[in-house]
Length: 152
Length: 104
Image (cartoon, rainbow over all chains, first blue to last red; front, side):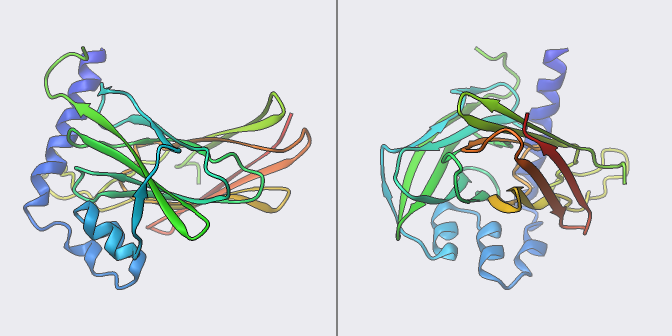
């Protein structure tokens, strides 16, 4: 049963991959606003440029994700930071057709740690960018996605 | 209405309140094809989630199709028993959903 869901996951992922070349991104790009551009970006650099931010690496931003994704369509990821005054958390999946995955704006009293599940199409990095003060800090974790193999 | 089910849990965990939420939603990226007809399945994903406690915003999430199907969200906040936690979401096709819980 497990194998079956796994296959389903990889199949969905490969369809995602194949469609990129087909120019299916176009509908997303019709949006003019800045944020929409970031969501349509196909590389990490473009996404950051669209958001107009520059980042610096920090070991205070922690991405907790499995080393090996058993089901690439459902990869649990937790982003955590020990930075003071974290305001926003941005999540990027480096090798997805659209890299920008999510943005979390943190309100008052919330712990700067958010758990969510993402689709990770190909082996790559899960990147978290945390805004604290006027600066953006980056942390990442490599996630391996296998095709047709057992998780091991 | 009942197409999308929003489930919310708010529980004390130590001195923090733990929030867990799951929405039943397809989260289509727009790149998948229908296997039978070969037609593209249009994008359909939740793009905004707002969680409030006693009408104060705790978390605003902007999502894309990269979030997994039946999205799950979990976080802690400094709160107390009796807080009214509310979750609202909307997707790119204009559907909305909400759930409300009182912290135990």
